[in-house]
Each structure stands twice: as C-alpha cells, then as structure tokens.
Amino acid sequence: MDWGAILTNTLGYLLSPVTIAYALAATGLAVHFGYAGLLNFGMAGFMALGAYGYAISVLSFGMPWYLAMLVGLLLAALFAIILGVPTLRLRADYLAIVTIAAAEIVRLLFTTQVFDEYTNSADGLGGYNGSFQSANPFPELPKGERYGFGPWQYTAAQLWVIVFGVLLLALALFVVWALMRSPWGRVLKGIREDEDAVRSLGKNVFAYKMQALVVGGVIGALGGIIYVLPSAVIPSSYTTALTFFLWTILLLGGASTIFGPSLGAVIFWMVLALLGNLLPQMAQAGWLPMTDIQAGTLRYILVGVALMLIVIFRPQGILGDKREMTFVK
Image (cartoon, rainbow, N blue to C red; front, side):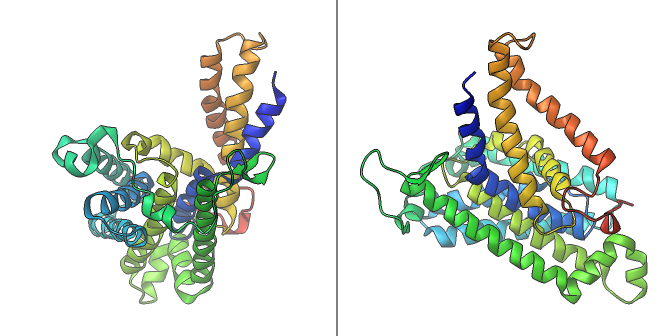
C-alpha cells in the first residue's frame, strides 16, 4: 500500500476549503442546537441559499464578490424568518421534520427548470469566481512552484480561498463567543434548559429563538459560500447527507462549545479521507473480502457506527462538559 499517498491525502484535509466550510456550518448549527436547543435538520438549505445567492448575484446581476456574498447571507436570514415564524412554537421532533422538509424544498427549487435561466437547474453553476480572485493578495508563482510545504501546498488561488475561509471562521467563532458571554447568550442557554422558566421571567422566548435561528443560519450560509468558492455550485451537494454530516461533526466536537464544531470538522474529514484512501487499498491487497468500490462505501458505515458510539458514551462531545449537556425536550 502507498502509505505516503494515504498520509498526504489525509493531512491535506487538516486545512482545506471543505473542512473550513463544514466548520462554519457546524458553528451555525451549534448556535441553533447547542445554545438555543433548536433541533434544526435543515442546515443544508441555509448553505445552499448562501452558495446560490453568491453565484447568481455574480453571474446574473454582475455584482462584485463582496456584495454577492452579502446577498447570500441576506437570503439565509430571510429563509430563517420565513421558516421560524410558523415553526418555532413546535415541539423539537416536529421542528426537526419541518426543517428537513424545508431544506429539501430549497434544493428542489434550485433543480427545477422553472428557474433554469438563473440556476442552470441540475447542472449547477460555475465560472463566478473571477471577481473574488481579482482581489487575491497572493501573487502567482512561476509554473511548478506552490505556496506551503508537504501535504499543504497550494496555488495562489487555492491559498486565497483558504486564508479567506479561515478569517471568516475566526470571525464567526469570535462573534459566537461574544454573544454567548453576553446577557443575550445567557437567556438563550436558559431557553435551552427550560423555556417555561425563562418565559415566567418576562422574556420573549419566541423572539430569542428567532434571533438564534437567524444568527446560526447566516453563519451556515457563510459555510455554504466557502464551500463553493474553489469550484462550482452543484445542487446534489445539498442533500440530507450534508445535514447528517454536520450533526456528526457537531456531536463529535461538542454541541455547546465554541471550538468543538471546528475540531469536529477537522477530525471528521481527516478520518473520512483516511478511510477513503486506506480501505480501497486494503481491499486491493486482499486484506478485505470485498471490492475496492465496496470498501470505499464501508467508510460511511464506520462513520455511522462511530456516531452511535459517540451519542452513547460521550454525548457531550470531545470538548463538551457533562454539566452543560443539551437535552432535547
């Protein structure tokens, strides 16, 4: 087996756009579930709105990249309001059903041919990153040379996406940290534990939940934008599997922590990359009684088993504290 290639491909996910994007989206999910107790299974919809809002604004309306990103965030905020008005008074299990359905509706709207002029339906969108790359502060290197070393070697365009994504992630973490240390955050955590008690103190529980849904949704949309910056917007990326991956990441790192979602994203993608490279080679070497294609699929089974073990034996996550565990009522 080619251990060098396996190690290189695995370590590459330590700092990659997909890891950063999932860390951002999981941070938004932490605001929803970890701090506000909202059982949201529709984060894929927020990511899709961020990505499509950015791409369509550039391609169809000729907006500069920074305004296009702002459009994506505003769409996510609007979606949170539309979603929250009729659903935030529902019980947790009903909220989960409604949010997963809403995310699927968003994805199907982008695949329908009714809006083909703007969304390109199932084929997705590409070629929208010219204005973003024009703001790239890193000069192009001579042919064959790259920034970085070892597994972390990037072109100027790739490095700009990663640096921009890391800056956004750092900003999002700081905002969440500041909010959760504020009186607003303390009320939000009180709602998570016992919303009736908070309501008895004269607080508008519905308003706080709506604000949390908007804040988390906007952070999730940021993740959706970073997710599509390197290449293209593909509607099939925003299926329920994306949401389930985010929940795995959130529970792995710790739902009620600041850095837990980021740590969970790094571990999740590195383990997935390791298994995706290792298991097929083990099958080819005859160490597994299956084909290399079947071995590649086996990694998702192992991830599912790992998620069950986390929920059973460490539901607070790696960085979580048992004293601050979130319980869904």
